[in-house]
Image 1 (cartoon, one colour):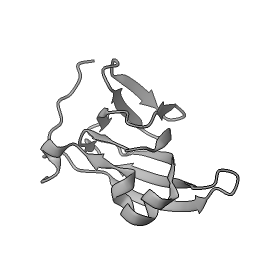
Image 2 (cartoon, one colour):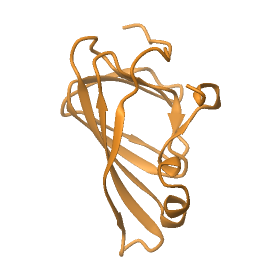
Image 3 (cartoon, rainbow, N blue to C red):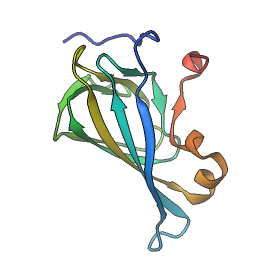
Image 4 (cartoon, rainbow, N blue to C red):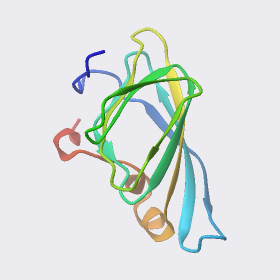
Length: 132
């Protein structure tokens, strides 16, 4: 499958914080759970998650996923991946033009950063696409 180029005309996913807790066994760290719902043909602009460690699990549907310069992967429901701090998430797309897709992402980051920046600490869209 050919790697898609980001198209700002595609619908953005809905991102909802479903939980956040300070980790008592890791002082200074917070764990945040995000539910990301992609409409059919949905796409996220290239982005990073700052200093957060991220694990993601596809709840339903099929996603296209590319990290850094690694090859793009097709990840179906039940599949998962890990993003190290600073990783560049180049492709994050719903593979289907007709069916929705949902993922759960778990981020672990500095509590101080999350308290100060909120959602801005969780996702930083590449400069080129921030005005979209």
